Image 1: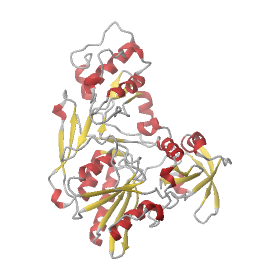
Image 2: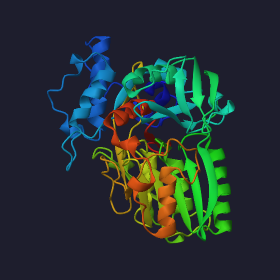
Image 3: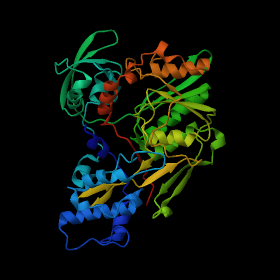
Image 4: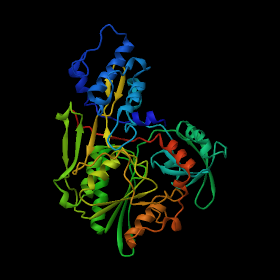
Length: 454
């Protein structure tokens, strides 16, 4: 599945339509679109004028910026990113503003997925592993598990970081592909996967471990998107079980979670935050100085009775947006410990679809901060301990490197010497990191808030 299709399969906020409904032929304050301009130029002018009005960094767009010099709104959105300068950052921070044709949006925004339900990463330059499987997908129904090695794709053994585009084409963009998998017992199984529709399952695993008299709750949460009723019922079940068992520590695995609904992040935070946080500020959402009337403050509404002084998050550069929002919101109220293969993605901002003729444009329009006003994590959150992503192990395996690192700390009070206990090649080889960055591109990274601007 392409990046665009993955992103457009989401029900983004439509509250921003308020602006177009009220302004009619006026855009960007008192400016009016030139009625004598061509249809194409009107679209480009409107794109720029809306952006000058709503963009978080609108003041930095120079007066000389010529929208008509670009082919279309998509090119304009990419061009304006370079004006997103923030104090403390040498490079522009906006990596996300974009535009897309409404027809394409409408085609895929129904939420119907059509892929294999499998995601992959390189463990080494020539060792491709299954990193996650959607249980209801073709891959899930075939019994494929995280940690299996892919040794052939359509009969080809040329599966390396140097040939990553071949992997992308056959894993994400094909309707049918035959894989040869090497299972943990070294047996080989050949499976042909056909793209099909399925319902995503955000909760991939929840369990409780008893290690050295410690009871440890573990939740693998893969997305803040999906059927919110089902997700909230899962939260209730999981945290009721954690509380009844009397867990001493909690590990939330967000290593591949690119974000999703803000409301789901808030709900999960309500279960994790200590009772002392109930009724206190969770986060503040801030627009540019033209739309301060839409700034808002949300508060914790404690769910359940779990009362822990700290929480562990397993993260990576794939942990983005709503995942980071959850982490940031909890930091003022408890000890938040991060570990994983790399620091988080770095996306403390959001956007809405704005209709312009037959396009939707998405200029970054708001940012979020926590109770303490902390929120400019464009460089991602740093780790308390760096440890490899155990791509050779299934979810919940206590020998999986990242989970092992968290459990080790809980049991002993110190992180193990990663170089002596785990395979760190996943994050140390530049070509592996580059290859996995490409493989991670189809994953959605964003925060969606359906309550704003209504």
